[in-house]
Every structure is written in C-alpha cells, then in structure tokens.
Length: 175
Image (cartoon, rainbow, N blue to C red; front, side, top):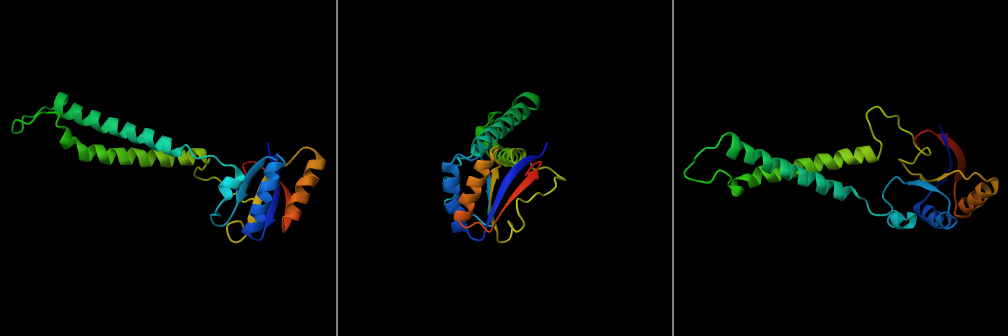
C-alpha cells in the first residue's frame, strides 16, 4: 500500500535547515531530510538520537572473540593436544593474534549486516529518490502527508516561508 508524502525541495542548506525547526515544532511527521552532502547541525535539528550500531558491533566482536578462544582451546587442549617444549596446551599468549583477527572480522561483518538490515538495503532494490537532484545539488524535506487539508496548507506555508523552490505530493511504497 503506497504512503503519501509531502516533499519540499530547497536550493541551499540554510533554507532547508531553517524549515526543519518549524516543521518539528508543529509536530508534523518528519520522514527524512535529503542532502547531497553532510550538513552540520542537521541531526540535532531533526532530533535524531544516537545510533545503536556500536552496540551491535560490540556484541558481534565479543561473539568473534568467544568463537576464536573456543576454537583454539578445543583444537589445542581437547582434540589434538601436543607437548611442545613443555608449554601448557592452553597458552593464552599464542591465542591473541587469532582472537584479535576474528574479533575484528565478526565485528565488521556484524556491523555491515546490521546496517543493511536496518536501512532495508538488499540486492535488486529499485532506487527511489525523494526529488530529482537530491544526489547532485538539491535539498529535500519529506513529511508524511497530514490527513487534514488545513495541516497540509500550514505545512506548505512553512515551506514557502522558508524558501522552498517546489512542494509536491507524492505516493511511494518504500520511499
């Protein structure tokens, strides 16, 4: 079922940033803001909280560490114990390089996988842009379209007052 959006485009970052505040103060459902490059202060203006992706990286890294230590302990102590110069079978210092490498590998792959899942990116997904030019030189604010016509007119007035170059209503499945 397609959702309805109100898309306002801007020519510069200052006018786009000046529109985000009033839109949030009026409690409109801000879907996303698109910019061709990172804009300083946009996260704070949109009210975005910190990502939980570092926690997933930590969990995946700890899983990699546990797998590395478990595999090495199993191979050196339980499955194939060798007496090499009287050293103990479970020499922790010998386990450090493999443990480090698997921690980094699992952490990187876990972070990458979690990012793809969270961003709903998958092979063959069709690209949907909010407005033409958002990857080149256009800034866009996308709102979930309010159900009340008066709210739509009020949002249009906010966008126009902040310098929007165009305001369109769009339907999209996964915009």
